[in-house]
Every structure is written in structure tokens, then in C-alpha cells.
Image 1 (cartoon, helix red, strand yellow):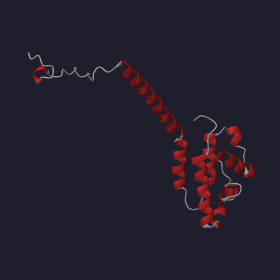
Image 2 (cartoon, one colour):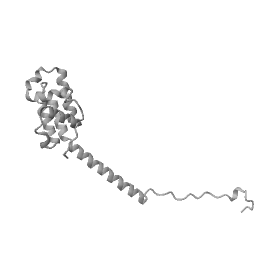
Image 3 (cartoon, helix red, strand yellow):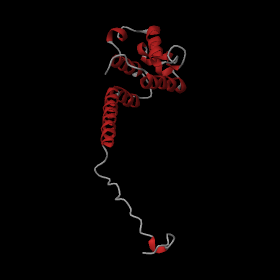
Image 4 (tube, rainbow, N blue to C red):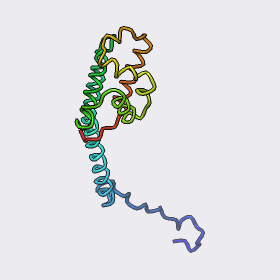
Length: 158
């Protein structure tokens, strides 16, 4: 052994520690994983419930697409949707201006009392009236109905 402290003969290789193994993970990772699984499970359950509760909307939109150019069935469709989303006692007896005001209130719009949806109350009792509506008015009525189906918030859990 060389007595000179600066001699290269006194150098030794570095001893590297054993690498930290990937498995098993630290207990904190099990906790994080469990919380993540619970949150994803809760989110999935909520998404399924939301999808199921909106099935009446999807069905109504399909029926809306099948309504012929006359639009005489629009009042029946929107009343059926309203009866699906709100208590019968609140919806069934509504007619005329009260019905239009209800649609505006629940759809967060004014399309039924002042817009293209104002024809809905008259078309309900005079189906032949749709023949005298211009294509623009009829399309506006269909759009108002479609928008209400998409936007209203039901009171009762479905």
C-alpha cells in the first residue's frame, strides 16, 4: 500500500446501493389506488344513472325525427315528455298560455310565449293549422320543441 494519500493506487471502486424494487409498492400506493378505484366507480355509477334517466329524452328525440313535415304531432310529443319528467298533477291540466308559460319556465327560454313555439298551443287543437304555417315557422316550432326536450330539468328523479 502506498503511503502517499494522493496516489491512484489508494482509489477503490464506488459501491452502488441495491436499486429500490418496484414491487411491492409502498403502502401509500395501495391507499391511492383504492381511492382512485372508488372515485372511478362512483363516477361510473353516476354516469350510468344519468344515461338511464335521460332515456326518455333520447326516445323523444327519435320520435321527433319521425314526425312528418306537418308537425301536428308535436303537441302530443312534448306533453308526453313533460308527463315523463314532471308530476302529472302539475302538467296534465295545463293548456293554452299556462302550458306555454310552463314550457318556457322549465326550459329556461321564452320560445313558447314569444317565439316560434307560440304555435304549439293552437296546433294542439287545430292540427290543420300546420298546413298554413310557413316552413320557417314550422322549423322554428320543431326547434323549440327539440331544445326544450334537451334543456328542461326534471323535478322527479327518473
